[in-house]
Image 1 (cartoon, helix red, strand yellow):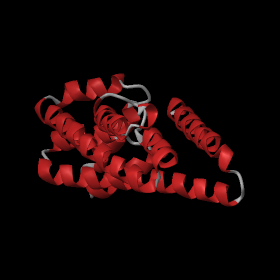
Image 2 (tube, rainbow, N blue to C red):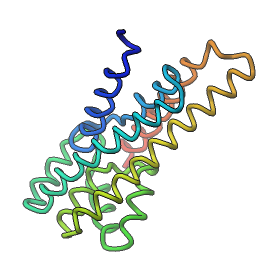
Image 3 (tube, helix red, strand yellow):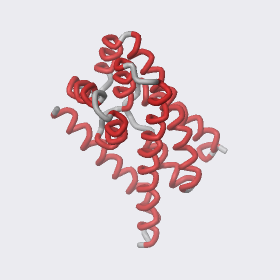
Image 4 (cartoon, helix red, strand yellow):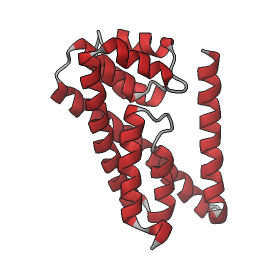
Length: 187
């Protein structure tokens, strides 16, 4: 089946979700929004569930590391591209408040999930509660991304621009990435 093989996309969602929650710095939203164009919203949503489950597993791994050796885990985080001390301090402070709200907001404001996981471990937060909150936050973020991709594709099709939808998605992601990178480099 090649590029349209659903098993390949499922494996990609699982690996990318786990990787981004641990060491990778490019969000799985790219794969998930592309899945909207290849398969449609329903399958993309199922893939987002898989990515959120894998991200939760990766987050729990990072949480365990944060609980056992927070300094080493934080040092590792600083080696991940675009993560700086400002994000570590921000998330560390957020874990002292209503952290699950900040975790959900962080998914949209550019604070990586892996930082919340390390800080949750360092703070001694219950792993089951963190896993549940983490899953919900990741799934909400992925669902928002695929929903926006589906909406954009539907609008483009309605305007007779179906052929440019993949280019529009690529351009949107290039703009989002450029904005995030420039913001992080300025921090």
